Picture (tube, rainbow, N blue to C red):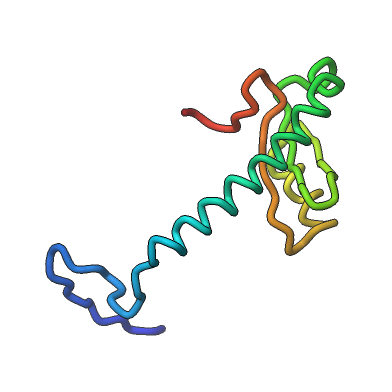
Amino acid sequence: MTQTTPRKVPRGKPLFSDRLPLSPEERARRKAQKEAFASRCREIFWRVYPDLVKEHYDWFIYIEPDSGDYFLDCDRDVARQKAKQKYPRALLMAMRVNETGTVGKI
């Protein structure tokens, strides 16, 4: 069994001081990447939504935007497993087939 020693961090100090804070340019670049990814996923979602909502209302959908593939199931874990089986390293977006596309509470 590994024994850990408690590390005291003064209030107001970062826990991991060895990590440098991101520059404003890097933060803006990452934010733009996330927004572009979400936009591509939403585009696919709204394209397939009218066909899916009739029979699969409130089901989970995982979208892989580079290929345009999506994986659908009533159980979130099963839908995720289907997606990860085909695209193990891809970044996926989880949505729900309902009016808003949101998965959890807002």
